[in-house]
Image 1 (tube, rainbow, N blue to C red):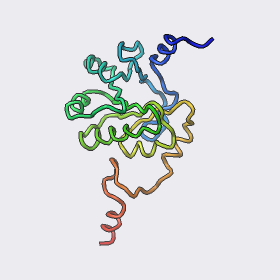
Image 2: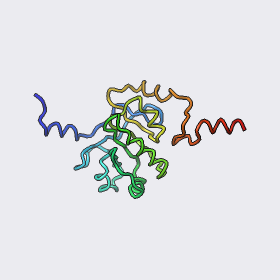
Image 3: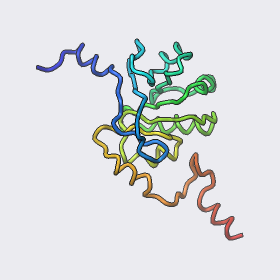
Image 4: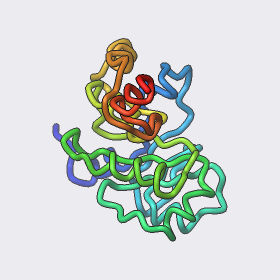
Length: 180
């Protein structure tokens, strides 16, 4: 028998633990953080990423961290508040939604956030290198993604032509400087 709408909503709002977490380029031994999409109530499981409005209301709880929606407007005021968080999660509702990359890059480059930035939601192996280049330090893989493939994907490129949050100087400038 298919679940009714209330049952489906309850399942959707239940805190989620990713089976596989890539953190700092390695498969994490454990993933203590769960992700709660319920904007109305705090999850029992801790530590937890919770929707931004809920986190703002409970900022003093050190076991909570903000979950940013991909359409979140990242202002200087919000970035200042986020500095007190132990980590930040950015939700990818679909792998085709690239707004989360911009949020991570803004947190790193414009606002100088140095804590963990975690990608959650529809995170595919093919995206990991680009996520890392935008400032993500942790990526919670979608359930059908294999961690071995993820680790290989992070080592595909040995040289990057464009600058990113880790390497500010483009390759052509490095080559020019080496020749002079």
